[in-house]
Image 1 (cartoon, rainbow, N blue to C red):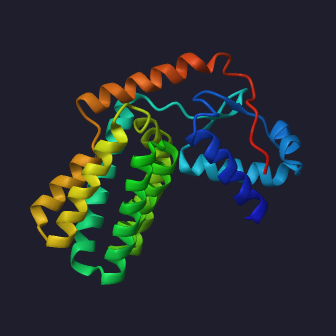
Image 2: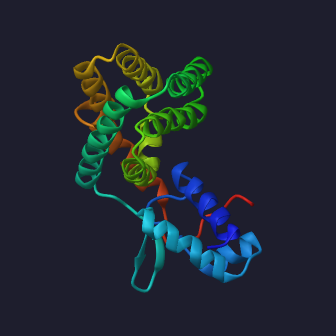
Image 3: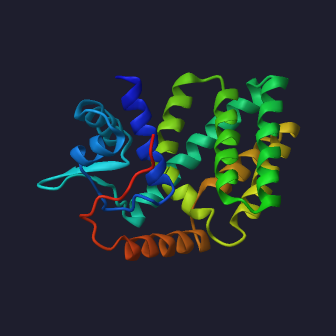
Length: 231
């Protein structure tokens, strides 16, 4: 796999994550190659990577399109994500070094800065660093790989949640509870804090479904090829 295809994958993934590429949008190899001034080969390789991540899917006579995940499927994915993150946090609480705890706290501090600035995009990236720091501190490479793979599939939807009013403040407060539990080594509090932070249920589920409905409504003609940012 070439560096060009990796760069293309990251660019297209970012467009999906930010909502610039909406669910159902078609991804035409020729148009993407033209926009990025590359041959079709790295474009095809990038799309294959995104297929593997579940962010796009292949449809007969339409080619690659951005995946539209049904709400029930999303709930199931978040349920699994919650348990993977609980496992990571439990292992991290036993195995992390002082440096790794400091990395988690540093990411948490970056989240706080984004909350103060009311910058949902900055919070999204700081939030990812926070979670990946916990994965790393688990010292279980297989678990890290599985958690990171599902995290990538859920990126667009985790980002959508942050657009809900006051969600980034609530998310930060939930992070604080996780950090406090990691510091104190309180196992039960840690499990509850992590699981409640990741699970999408009740009002959060209703808010996510509402956001998805707005995205679908704004997609318009799903056969169009949206403009992509230059690379």
